[in-house]
Image 1 (tube, rainbow over the protein chains, first blue to last red):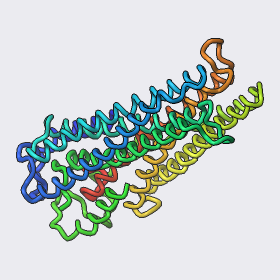
Image 2 (cartoon, rainbow over the protein chains, first blue to last red; image 1 turned 60 degrees about the horizontal axis):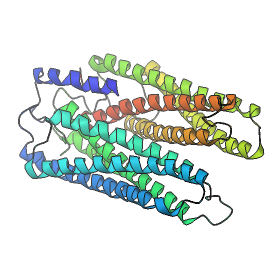
Image 3 (cartoon, rainbow over the protein chains, first blue to last red; image 1 turned 120 degrees about the vertical axis):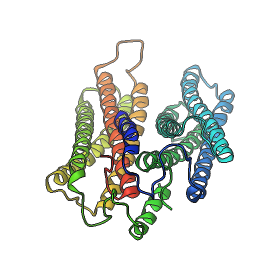
Image 4 (spheres, chains in turn cyan, red; image 1 turned 90 degrees about the horizontal axis):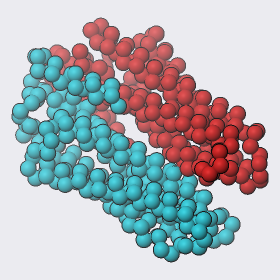
Length: 206
Length: 206
């Protein structure tokens, strides 16, 4: 991701020297004008909802995987496989859930107080980069987890699958749903960053 | 991805009714002014390079996986596993390579002739959506392929791994490198879309 980051950073010091047209906001201090405040609030609510959904699904996936552990010690080798599968899915979804929770707190704080935790451009870049990163992480864990679950002994297609297999499939699916919401919020926060870099406001379409 | 799409689409018809400031280009016909033409050309070259790299890596991964097939029929069950692994990695990387090749052709055509194949906004949205989609696809295939390769019989950590295992690991790694370049080009084309939606030009920072 280095080139767009550098792009944006290089552009921001240059912008104030331009004759800024009246439609664009001033670049730094006035946080947002009252005209666009309503739209920014709605965008923030959308991001908050997406993060809430991502949090719920990844928390559910982590809990489901953790609860799956004690019912499946059929043989030693299957247990070893199962354990590495469980570690992978649990750890990733726990990380994603914690990240979503922290971002939700930051989002709620911003909606209530109207200011961001970090300075605004840093906060926007932070949100976008981490959304994208954790979305990739969740997808990779989901794909790897699905493959690993398929390879668990006792989960073959011939006989009806054991209950721990069904639970494993469900937890992978929950994790992938969490990935979906995280990817959507990465899209929204990417749009916010680009609009901040390009126009100096987070939501200039009004 | 529906909400940002709808955002952009709703915004475009509204923009011309505004008093467009002189810094922003006209919205539709003048494709780009001569001032920004140089920068757009450089951005297009960057996208072309990223796509070329993604094409090379995913083609190499597909060829490597295909060439890996005939040397590894050790037992029937391992062959079955190996076959499904091979199908997965080969198919995904072939799809990504074909997509990158087509996009490279479109990119070269645009650099030479200065016009896009589809109408410009459609082309930008098409590029971004497909870059993002195929990046997710390549990542998922890479993660699933890595897990599957680890589970192939004969690829255990105790004894030195068989040569077909090493080849499998290499092809997965090549596919993941292709994913990296595709993700970078998704970032660049996402920036292009956002800048087109927000300002009516693809590269307003000059």
